[in-house]
Length: 150
Image 1: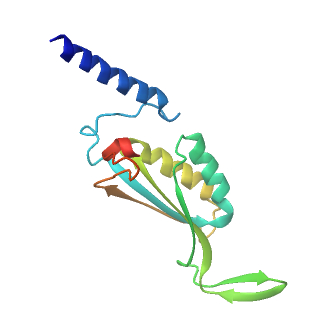
Image 2: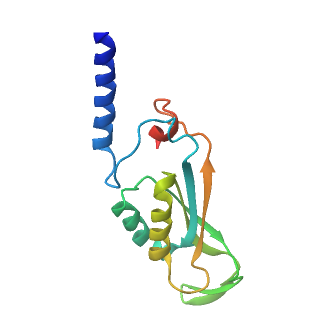
Image 3: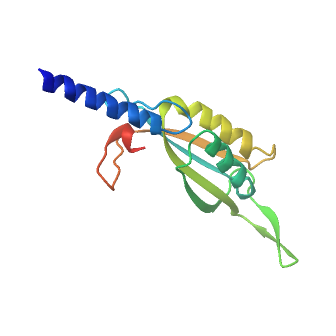
């Protein structure tokens, strides 16, 4: 009986320690069963010159784990006039930045709002954000599965 109580206390203490070490965004649940299916992947494409502002805003929210990719593409703004070495030229593919991140579902709205606020210039071509559910997440380093692997 005493062993069971000690084990429970140890597990609870470990969970409390993990919560204290969690990001500044606040409490993170440690029970993967509670959070099963509630992880989401946020992907966004926006103008390159807004990258630092968006990363700083995400950092203030406590979400620094992002993947950044430099991409080229177009939406409604089909062609654009750019300048290189003093010469003007037209291009169909515009330089953009793509950010991907896995987050807990309750954090999604705040992150999307922060990205919108800091990526917005008010002009055509500001970008898009899309959110998809994550059915499974595994940390390669140690095999942790689910919400704890974020």
